Image (tube, rainbow, N blue to C red):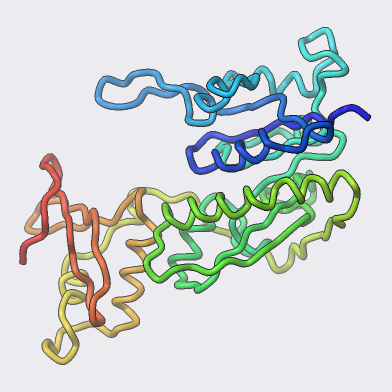
Amino acid sequence: MKNQRVAFFGTSKYCLPVLEALKNLPAGRQELVLVITREDKPVGRKQILTPSPVKQWAIKNGIKVDSSGVAASLLIAPPTAGLQNDEKVDLAIVADYGKIIKHEVYEKPKLGTFNIHFSKLPELRGPSPVQSTLLRGDKTAWITIYKLKYYPELEIKMDSGPILWQKEYPILPDDTTESLYTRLFQEVAKEIPEIINSLAACRLPLISQDHSKATFCKMLTKDDGFIEWDLLKNSMYVACCDRNMIPTSRVEKLYNQYRAMYPWPGIWTIKDGRRMKILKCHLEKEKIVLDEIQFEGKTPEKYKN
């Protein structure tokens, strides 16, 4: 029996543990043969064209990689277009890719195309499930792996496919989007080899989502990080000391906003007519303590009352 050929769609540094897991799939069973990522982008003040972390990983590890979109189209093209019949992939995994994949592409692999999504689907379908989970103040996060499937009757089609696997993980009190995102990818990477083996052996049934229970999260913008200065200022005092102190629940909500928006877009306010970004803060005795701030056009500095 020949190896099952696996393709990976992804872009960010966070999903690299999944790539490592795919690279180390058992010999004689599955093999990572193709990585598809987003196009190179200008980075830094000098706008140097830079490949994605996933592309850099693939080049370093000698895995065929494409960031032009051509390889994705080859998955559905006739053999004369590029990939030969024995080079077609059997399975595709998607993680933090950042682009919409056409259903003509994701329906082609024999075993299917499966996306890693960080919510308990059908809750929080959409592009910001980790941020939304932290904003709500949830104590646990979920990982769902589901099969990409096209439902023409659904108005909003994203993240609606049948579920292959779900698991719950604890959220730490000071987790940010960055730390939680990092840890969830590390956790799912541990599970990927067994999940793929079970999928190939038909040991994992697909469970349809209840679309009537779907909730959605939006694409974040810089405005989602804005906090009114008076509200932030009042959250920096203990209740017994100041009658203007806002309730503990509101302080926690503001801190959850910081956790959810870190590292992007970050939280910011307007203080004395100047835009001020809160780079680091923490909770201490029912108040928010600002650790590091940055005024627009200035270098980061420690916050001083």
